[in-house]
Image: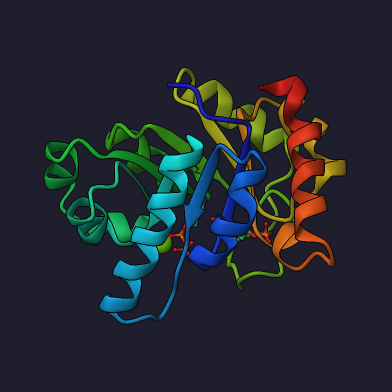
Length: 201
Ligand SMILES: Cc1ncc(COP(=O)(O)OP(=O)(O)O)c(N)n1
Ligand SMILES: Cc1nc(C(=O)O)sc1CCOP(=O)(O)O
Ligand SMILES: [Mg+2]
């Protein structure tokens, strides 16, 4: 499976409505602390926009809702995975992306036969507190040797200036949150990401 090299992660369908029409082809809806009705509404809005614009939508955490709402791709962290029904996910035909931060997690992830493996945080991230030190670029190359041909997603502290290093180290895809959502001009920054990832597309 091939992933678009630019993977946008946002916490509201409104971001997807704003940014996906610019040409984003891979987006994750990562919503925390909302009730189920709100989650469903957000997933439906995101799904509608992604369908119109040919963008792959990935639902973070809420694999049951993803199935019920007819989505086809979920992202789970290690704790999410431990609590999930992997058979139900596979039986529903959902594609699966998994987080990893160390070798033990990588082994667990590969045993679940995911559609991509994410490694992070590559650089320090301000989005959430993490117990892992930044992985650095050499870790990307080490992970790539172990996960190929499964696509490898790099995440954490990424910005356009860091992309060539990440891809040259072996990542297939670069995921981003705050470099875009906290940017003074998220639309222009999204265009920059699309242009900067063109040579890896
Ligand atoms: C592409 C990608 N990589 C890693 C994560 C982190 O997932 P997780 O560890 O479950 O943490 P939360 O995002 O749920 O806080 C991700 N969402 N996407
Ligand atoms: C949600 C998330 N997961 C990570 C991991 O390492 O698993 S790093 C991260 C935050 C990414 O945000 P930003 O692009 O703003 O640094
Ligand atoms: Mg999670």
